[in-house]
Length: 341
Ligand code: TXA
Ligand code: MG
Image (cartoon, rainbow, N blue to C red; front, side):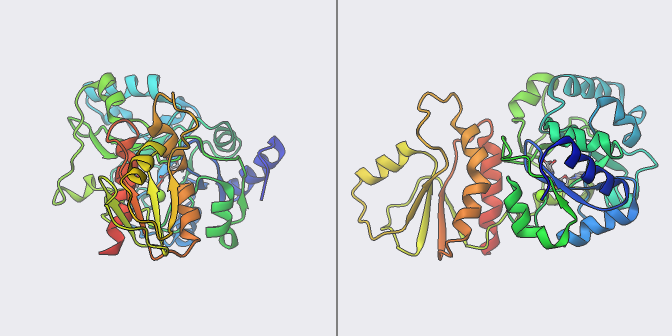
């Protein structure tokens, strides 16, 4: 495990330059990074994650001017170029990934053979340094085995992939806690492929309408494996509820409420207690918190990692309010619940 000192970041950066892999913090989740232009590093990313080759990687840059290294912006229509400008100017660096026409030099392995490439400029200072000190373009999926919960701290990475990667940089807890929003702007209107750290409302305020519901039978190039019905899943079966059902607590089960308020209401209904573990996604400490969804998103994967260690027979989860980051939270929970079927 490396610290986030400059010296340690350089050790990880040198490893990436030499074609090896290093896991690193970002503001969304931890990434598993390798040189975006090195075919064998890319192959190793797929191998370590046991990720199917049809699932393309996001390329991380640390400077908007590095965009041209990986994307051929000239191939965009002029309205799309304007939209890209507005997005980069307002939301980069940050949790937004943009799908663009690919630069020829980007290996097809990175994009799973697609003519497009996903690019993100993370806000986390450690991620930025790692990218700058290495090759300027780092391919990085979330640092978890394919289909499992994403890591939001270095221990999650250590536990899941520690024996299979060269270095992990510990940069503390990811502040946002859900992955970046993936937006394809090669389409008109642009298409939101994965809800994430930047809410749809914020994007639409900048560039107008975006399509968000991709029909399951659409062109495969528009589908993204984040869209697979089962993903982001704990090992324990997860059941998602609009409101928690009036069932008695089962001592073998875990109940994950959105906030203290609904937990209190639920208790007042005199539902018979027979035990069961109770968690909430928000602490209730910050009653005036403007957006509880922000706090819930930051806690989501960490709490699910903790719950998964209890070896309960089921996890019952209450949905988040469907606005802002709540959309991304409910998207991940819906896919986690789909694992049962
Ligand atoms: O927040 C994040 O985006 C994190 C951190 C590490 O940056 N990364 C991440 O990567 O979530 P990953 O590999 O777990 O998810 C990447 C998503 C997948 O759903 C993938 O299918 C989609 O981006 N994607 C990548 N390239 C694409 C492309 N050319 N067209 C459409 N979707 C693409
Ligand atoms: Mg992932």
